[in-house]
Image 1 (spheres, one colour):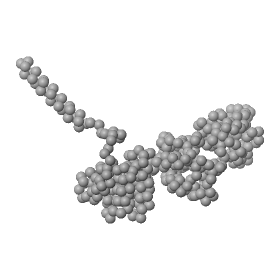
Image 2 (cartoon, one colour; image 1 turned 90 degrees about the horizontal axis):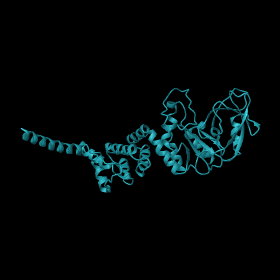
Image 3 (cartoon, rainbow, N blue to C red; image 1 turned 30 degrees about the vertical axis):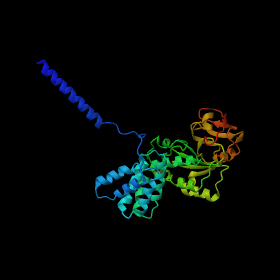
Image 4 (tube, rainbow, N blue to C red; image 1 turned 135 degrees about the horizontal axis):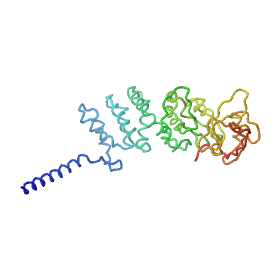
Amino acid sequence: MARPVLILCLRLFFSLSIFGMSLADELAPPAEAGDTVPALTTLQVNDAIEQLRSPEFSVRQKSIETLQAANAEQIDLLVQAIQTSKENEVARRCVDLLERRYVTGDRDSAVVRQVSDALEAAAKSDRWFVAEAAQDSLERHWKRRVEITLLELQKMGAGMSPKVPEKLWENNREYSGPFRRPSPAGDDHLKIFVDEHWKADAKGFELLRRLLPLVSHDFMTGASRVSVVLIDGHTQQPEEEAELRAIFGDTRVSSRGAVCLGIIYQAQDSGGSGVEVSDAQDDSSAFRAGIRAGDVLLKFDGRTLKDFDELIEKLKAFRPGDEVTFQIRRDGKRTPFDVKVKLQGWYER
């Protein structure tokens, strides 16, 4: 009896081994992003685009999979197909392919930059169905659009805070009513700095316009997500300043000196003097000196401070590294006290 049982066990063992091998092959992990993918030739890309017109789903699907491997230069062939194809459905499928690469690719790669420019151009196409499809894609992926644009602006030398685009969404701020006014000192508020180190040229303005979703979504978030600071010494011409205000709105564009105190002020009752602090940005000049929300700045270097506008004008006379003294009134303190502040620039270069 023992011998038949042994044979049965051996057969079962080999059966399970074979089954395990085939199951392992079937469940093998997909190729990693860094695995080498054979480069497509121009002929292969054109053939795959031609197959997008096929009535057979399997043929179209295979061509879509092929075109996913197109490199930055070959993206232009998709753009040409969008512009010249007589079949609307082929042009639409090419737009869909661009969207896939736009969403899934490395946002700092040459391919995604090329795809980004292609979608932006398609959104302005004279062919309404192409423009509609591209614009719809950009609007649905507006956060991705902002992130790609910010990386491009940084490459051009634009100063901004925060530098890491993802920080804009970390708080996951959702709509909570029109009276919600989170502090623009936070990382979920983008600040773009225009100074002597960066001048917005034609390409810069084109990129800045791609940040309009940060303005158009203001209503849904309850507060602005973006502001532009023109720092003394910038080289923008008056008409270029006007263009910035046309893009973002007058209230989102301001002129400042070379130093940043890092406070948000609270308007006081009529007749009151001084500057009441409603918030102090982390790691700012004010925050590092110990200034906090609720403090009232009464004097600046020994002279009475009238209001926030006067403070801005006074700060224009200073450079990063200079030290100034504020007299402060704080709740819980019977008498005002002095605080020395070492002034910082607007952003780290």
